[in-house]
Length: 125
Image (tube, rainbow, N blue to C red; front, side):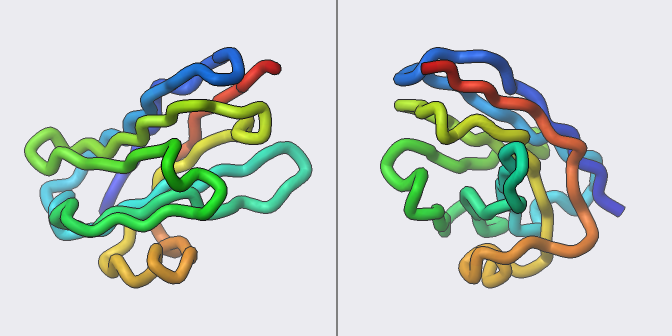
């Protein structure tokens, strides 16, 4: 069983930065690939970024490539999303997700079983 808790969301002006955290409560955090997804009002949930269990491999949606950086610290059982040059279009609830297979995120898909409850990011223009 994997429980995920996001934090770090908030209100920021366009061009600003935020760092999101996803804390996991599981002994086997290092055995899971992890991903970030977001859902804007009235839109479907979309893939943002994914990271392999070791942290050596990462993948990003085209819309955030070059602005967002995903990382993880397995010793702290925490995943991060550094978001720079934020745009109003980045406004959404951000969710973290865990899956045994990194290929899930390479395909832009999500793991079926483990989600956090989300953290709201609002970017004002």
